[in-house]
Image 1 (cartoon, rainbow, N blue to C red):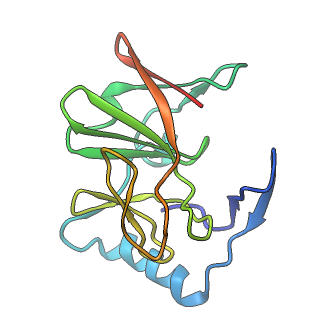
Image 2: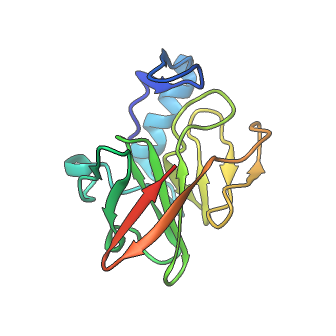
Length: 156
């Protein structure tokens, strides 16, 4: 389940703000995780809590994660550093800043082949990051991904 206590805001380096999720939104997100309806999964990769590997962040900001963490046709959410990695087809990897452009919650669910923000339901195309269902009006911010052996190097 995503951490809804604080989320990054686009307010300059290191800025953070308290998530403005209502009680209903928090309960809906918790319910989605607890009940897990068919076709909905919480994204893996939250380090020890999510079953994925712990990402490595270099001094230059490059994030390294194992390519094997992200299944074909799926996505992996890394809470820290706030990234979503997708693999729409075998060997085709994409990475996005997980911050939903609507109100800053983490787009941390994967539903019906889409990356979804649990706060207000915005959905994004895993191959492009484009918004496919609002209320977000713009897509996720893409990061550069390079496959290096069995690891993904993510920059940007």
